Every structure is written in structure tokens, then in C-alpha cells.
Length: 463
Image (cartoon, rainbow, N blue to C red; front, side):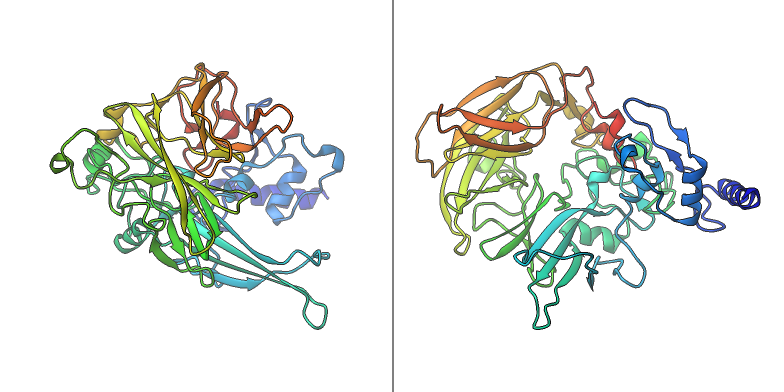
């Protein structure tokens, strides 16, 4: 009715007056707009129906023929990147929660077991939000699906905890960011002159002047391991993975963090993944000589082995040392490993693909602006410069347990920017390796994941 609509408009206008102030009903209409998309690059006002749903916290009715039209509300999208919290259910410091899920419908009888998931879940500390969504601390979810009980009933129990890395614990104790992160979060230098705004971890990040970044981060190469990228269960262990550091071992039952895991002696603790070869050992700084492990190992369906790789930068040679290792599931025993050099590769690939005999690694056309990084002005990822018109180099390396032996080789892939593989296999008829991967088309953009910065990713602006 017109009177009801008038009341709704009055509430909406009242909320607009309180944007950013946390007043009134504790809501803000700043992001109550239909989000921009590639084909409609400007935000649009909410329709009356959508506005009414937002005011009443109701889900709009969606007709089948309207789905896929790219209509979504910016505020809803931002809530996906809220810090993991709920009063009375989730412990705000540890992220611990445990509850039985409601089951709608019927679970298949053979769907039984434990599923682990990992991703950024804690997006700030003491009212300050991380500068980039991918800098959030890791959050492990465990979903246990039980078989039918004697009454024929099923049960699903969910449990969660943050990965309490050394950086996580330091931030919690100091109540501030104590390390640089991969994508933009950093130490606030000269905090008396440049304090954070403390708007809340679910608000936009506080701006930080260049002078504050330099004073807080110059020549500091200690990057926080957020352990937020992947989780695997193998060989009796649960590991939270991060591509530029060591895995963190997680208790498979309680999800409490046990500590860094050296992959059964394969990784050195407290050393940077940088090696300077042909230099007398006495002249190599103690902090160098380590390796980092990929966040995306694969399990081979043929052998049951976990196949992963560790990497070390070789800055003098502008190359990357890669060691591919296969483990079996008995006490995480190392089966075999092989070492390779990737020439003209200054930055570690993110993902891998695997066949019966090969490991595939993609190297994008990226270079590091060392001055921006070492000065503290930019985070490691922000200091990367991308050539979106250059071809991608695909390295094909023999697996340590390959049945067919071949020499390592590489091929050029037409210009694109690619992070993840889907899958790969060897064609039984031709013997060719077939690999499927996602990639952005050629672009003149020099930005690397910049559209993921700020509060949440802006997909219509990703190059």
C-alpha cells in the first residue's frame, strides 16, 4: 500500500542519514545498490521490490527466467567478505564453533565422511581491516557426515577454527598488524602521526600514507604466513597450506593448530626461500637457504601418492629452483624427489597440474619491482608488473615416480594471464598431454590482482 511504501521510504532515508555512523538500526545503505557488471559498468538504484527486501531482511523472489542476468546487490556481496563472527556461537579470538547442521531433503546413503575447507576468514584486528581480502587469516571448516543411526537418522556436524599461525598470534597479542602480508596489509609506521581509523573489520580498510608504509616496512622482507589457501588431509595429517611459507599442521579432531610442519624434513624452518649459489657457505646469511611449499599439491589416483613441489628463488640467476616430491600415505614417507631449474622464472607459479608421468607448471609474464617492495611502498603482489600481451611459459617436468622417462621441456602458450589449472591427462591414443586451465585474455593492464584489493574483489574490473 502507499502508506506502507511511505514508511519504508522513511526508514530508508533515515538509514542513509546514518551511513558509516553505526547509528539507528545498525545498518548502512551506502552499498544498497545493484552492483556494476562487465556489460552494465555503472551501479544502479535498487528497485522498490529489492529495497523492501533489504529493509525487511528478506530474500527476493527470483524467477527462473531471470536468473543469470547479473543482478546482485553490492551490500550482499560485501557480506561474503565479513569476518567470521557471530555472537554466542563463534569465539571471536579463535573462530571456534561447533554445531549440528539442519538437513533439508535426503542425503545419499554413501555420502559419509569428513570434509575440510580453508580460506580467508579473519579480516582484521582491533577494528582495523586488512587491506586486501586475500590477506585474511586462514579459517578451517570441518564437516562430518555421519551414517544412519539405529533409527535411520543422519547427522551432520560442523566445526571451525582459525589457523593460529605465528603471525596470527603476534597480531592478537599486539592488537595490531605486526607483519607485512602478501597482498597489501602492512605494519603502520609512525602510528602517533598516522593512526588507523578503527572503523571496524567489516568496514573499508583505513588508508595509510606512503610515509607510514615506508617507516613501518622498508627493507622488511618477513611476509606473514596466513595459511589461508588450501587444506589437505593425507598420511594421518591435516595441513593448512600457503604458497610462500611452510604448511601448518592442524589437529584433525579439534582443529587446533599444532605448528609448522617441515614435510617430513623437506623444509627448513625460519629460513627465506632464497638461495645464492656459488657463494661460500660462511658468507650466506642465516635467514637464507630455505624453501616454500606449494599450496596446491595433487593426489595421484594411480599411485595414491601426494605429489607436491617446493621452490626457492635464485635471484642471481633470475631462475627458480623447484623440487618435486612424492609421498605415500604411510606416515607421510617420502618416496622420491627430483630437482629442476626454471630459467627466466623469478616468481613461483601458483598451481600445478599432473598426469601419470608429468607435472605441469605455468609461468606468467610477471616481473618484480624490487624498489617498490623493499621500500615498503608496495606489498609483494602489488610490486608485480604484468605483461598481459606476452606468452605464458608452460614447463613439463617428469614426475619422480614416472613410468615413462623423458627430458624436461617447455612450450609457449598464447598470451593470457592464468593462475589455476582444472585438470590434465595423457591421451592414450596420441600420447599428447592435454591440460585445461582458466585464464584472462590478453590485456594492456599492468596490474596483478589489483581488483581484488580493498574490501572485496571487484570482478567487473579484473583485467
